[in-house]
Length: 553
Image 1 (cartoon, rainbow, N blue to C red):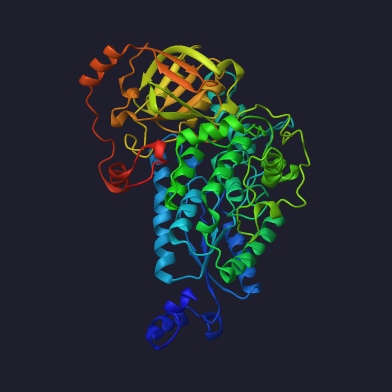
Image 2 (cartoon, one colour):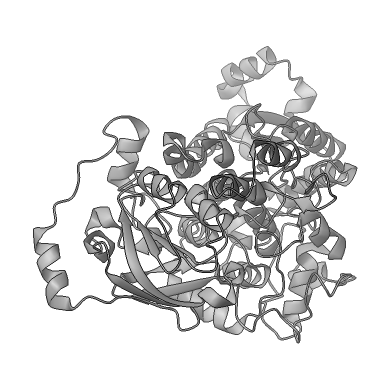
């Protein structure tokens, strides 16, 4: 066993004495040591139940002959961090989580790992760590939140909550109306109830083979989640016995499967950051062009919130991620020979799976659209690409041209939106919010929700070198690369410039002649960094383009 490095023979007697100090017995040390990486904390609603999940995982490990040993991973609540300096610290935690988990796993020589994440950067950070350490690993997430219910019986969620603030500034809601959303939008623990980033990534743990069936969709408050956790604890022992490792599972074919499921589900645009970063840790390079190629062949089968009015509990009732994968196999869009954390291939895992709600998971011959939920746009404004959640864009905004309204920070933009200075036809440009320029690549949920909440979602576009929450809808185009702080063309946009967006054609153009752009480029001076100390200053020096997943070098 790998753990023999810290527990077997006379040379490791000092190590064993420290295990004894922890209360472990000789008998427990003779079994495989399984690290249980638990992201429990008291500030993230998606993580407040993870102590219960961890106890269930540990019960499963013990039932199958292992010794579970728990240690923590951090997590940020993007909703609480939203709209202020705290959001600059969200994306950086993905790498902090990967680094610290790698350090703990290597320092203590575990034989296997069970990862217990739930929210936005926590899931990809732990997947990155799993790829680095490359010992048998399985994921068991905390599960999604149930949808809320307003006083009149309508269902609601966090994206409606953010849009309600825009509705208040537009005079459509009073404070009591806003408070109704406050009291009802987030009724339980769990990752927020729509197909936002956390749930997107948890669903993709199934698609890539690292999570058991239901990991992405069984609600946090259902007892089935605890049973899933026990089974994950049992299954890690099988993976250790057979020495099935993350890089045996997360192969190029598995990443292709994950991107295909991503397009069918209509996942968050943040997956276009996280999948390349996870692949990078596996020694596999994904690029944005591959995403468009996959999207062009993959029908969009689901419209969960914010694209529609259904939620994660409904997807679970319809058969979950595996039912979506079953539909995709009908046209040969997935490689079903890949190995998974069940110790079986995908085709074996799909035995007995059924699509129980063809209204929620459209049959592949009757999709919402013939192409995928995410599009990568390119043009002179974004030579390396930018991304949009196509499935959450109204038909009216699939093609749009309008004057640029230029802001050098999220705060400047939100002030103008709330003041009623943005009008139908405008293209809001928010720059210097990229990985380096932010630093930290903040999510722009407040501005996009304000635009939608004020009734401008079908007439105003927003473009940024920052990124978006999975709760964002509308013509919200992020990850513009190169970013402004790197001298990308978005840095040279001026107030009133015409910008043309064509999502079906995957094009975005700044309608300014090259001579004028060259003159602006020659006169451009990069602004001083907004933060010059601490982890964000270090992050700004090391982070690469969002087109590469914002990996560190």
